[in-house]
Image (cartoon, rainbow, N blue to C red):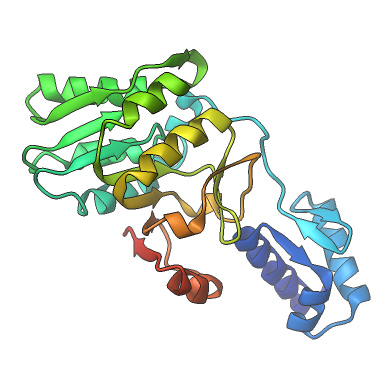
Length: 261
């Protein structure tokens, strides 16, 4: 494959990683090549296991169709998650009521709240609860902690179900920090657990500000259940600058972007 061909394949993958899918006709127009040439590029990329061809185009390969356990998530992209957590924590003000989701990225916020006064945190993850209790016992967190009870999902170290949703209705949240399994402009945040989606939507509906926290590898990903729509997100905190292809849509939907450096 020529250098030009490799550059075109990289463009295809860049689009795919952002959008989650590509159409052959759109690619032919963008790259100014024939449909036959696009077909060959997609065949090559599929052979390299970098995408999956479908009728009329291709989709991003999802490495897993099952939610990874908390322990597996905790050891991936640790430095990026710390930067994202630090940037997101700058949004927190004294006296805030926060909801912190069960992701290994969202829990990083907690490490950067030591100078915040009278903060209340609502959680439904045992791991996040354990970290908060540990920090409180060490004098590193002085606020209030509330845990949403419900059906226990041991594998993912969290609770879920109607009981948790009912308890969540008692809280008016200033800022909700939401974790991301997959993020696309046309679908918002998607995830693996339908009941978790119900609970997150309940919280987001009562939150003044919704902050999605994710590294760039989740862009373009899509999973079985929609958690929240893009219009429900106020701020995205991530480890890269905003993709140019997303700028117009984000502006239209009033979504701000924070590049955690």
